[in-house]
Length: 290
Image 1 (tube, helix red, strand yellow):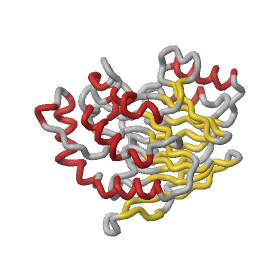
Image 2: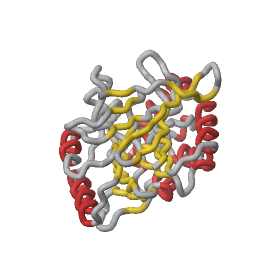
Image 3: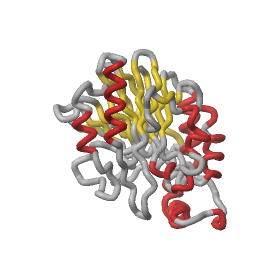
Image 4: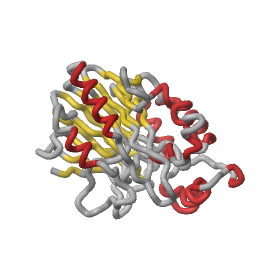
C-alpha cells in the first residue's frame, strides 16, 4: 500500500474572541500570538497541491486538524481540505479536535464534518470509536485516544475495552495485515521530548497488547517532530510520526510528513519538509531510530 501520512495541520482559522468559551480563550490566544507563525497557510496550500499531484493508495491524517475545536474551525478546514478528502482518505481526530467537551456533546463536531472520511465502525464496537478502512490487502484501524483535558494538559488514553474489541475483531476475521492509526504516540525519542502532561497515559498497556498479532505499522502525530522507529523486539512494527506536517522546522523540531509504501511487511519511505525560503516542500533526511 502506497501512503501519504500527514498530521497536526493546525490550520489557521480566525475566530472572534466573543465566540470563544473557557479553555478555548487561552488556547486560541496561544495559537494566534505564538504558534500561528510556525504554521503558515502557504504550507497548507502547498501540502494540498503535493497530495493532489501524487500517486498513492491512502492519505492518512492522524488528527489535530483544528486548534480549539470550535465549529467555525471544523467548517472552514473541511472546505480547505476538500480537494484531498475522497475515498482514499483515512482521518482520525486529535486532542485539539476534542479540545472542549462542547465539541463532543451534544454534537460530535469532528464526526459531523469529517466522519465520512474515517472509515467504517467495526461490528460490535459497543459504542467505542474503532474504525476500519481496507486499502488493497491492508486494513487500517483507527482509534480515538483523545479526551477533553484541563489547560496545559494534552494526555491521551486508549480504553482496555477498545484494545480487546479490536483484538477480537482481528482474530475473528483472521486479519494479519493491518496498521493502527492513533493520535498519541506509544514511543518517544530518547531525549525526553514528550512530558508526562503530553503522553498517552497507558502506552505500556497498548504496547503489550500489540505483541500478539502485531500490526505492520503504528501511525501517529501529537509530538511536533518527525521520526520513524524501526521494528524491535518490544515493538515489532514500524512507528511513524508525521507531526507537524505544516509546521516550520527548527533546532528541536524536524517537521514534515512521510510518503512511503508498506509491502510484504517492509517499509520504503521518504520524508518531505516545508522550506520557508522556497515556499514549498522538498525531500529531507529521514529521522530514523533503530
